[in-house]
Image (cartoon, rainbow, N blue to C red; front, side):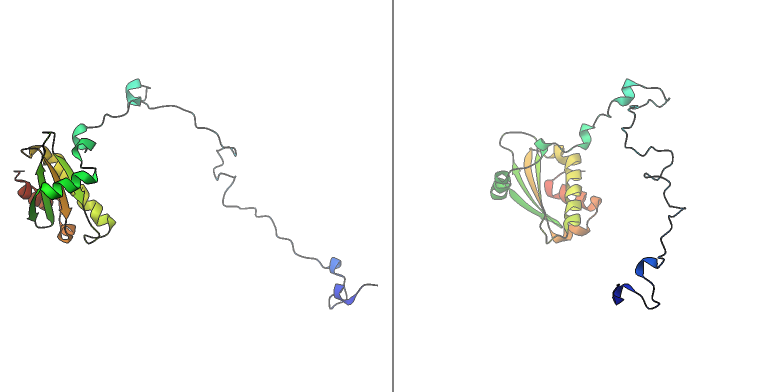
Amino acid sequence: MLNAASYDRRGKHETDIPTPQPQAETHSWLSCADGDPGRSRRPQAAAGQGAQAPNGKDSAKAAEPAPRLKSNSFPKAARLRQRKDFLRVQAEGERRVRGGFIVLVSPRADGGPSRLGITTSRKVGRAVVRNRIKRLVREFFRHYGQKIVPPADVVVIARPQAAKLNYEQVKRELSSALGIRP
């Protein structure tokens, strides 16, 4: 005999109760696994065609990467990278304060090219602001660093006022501190 739990109120057995089954969607958003009916369902490597010349024909010259312009770079030889160099410039260098920057200048003993070191603290602003200031100072030094006579190691310390400066103002202040005519 069946127990009472297997019956519902109307007296029918659970197995006799019809349950609605979900219908498969006939209009799905994607027509196949990748969403593009023209693509195959399996991943395939793209055909390697290579670069083409402007006239549409293959060319070995078109496949070559564009040469980097050396004038737009800021090479490692133009940077102060070691802590001991920063400390030497701070101890021996001449201090010049101009608006948003403190500039420390120490002539190079070895006669090499001028080098730049940049320091920005969190007092200046958030990382985006500090990085913007560093880009502006590097851009100035890239254009006018070779005009520093005699060649020197330069450390630029950004002050909070530097956060509001544009490139022209940075150029004016740094050229004044370094004695350069832009």
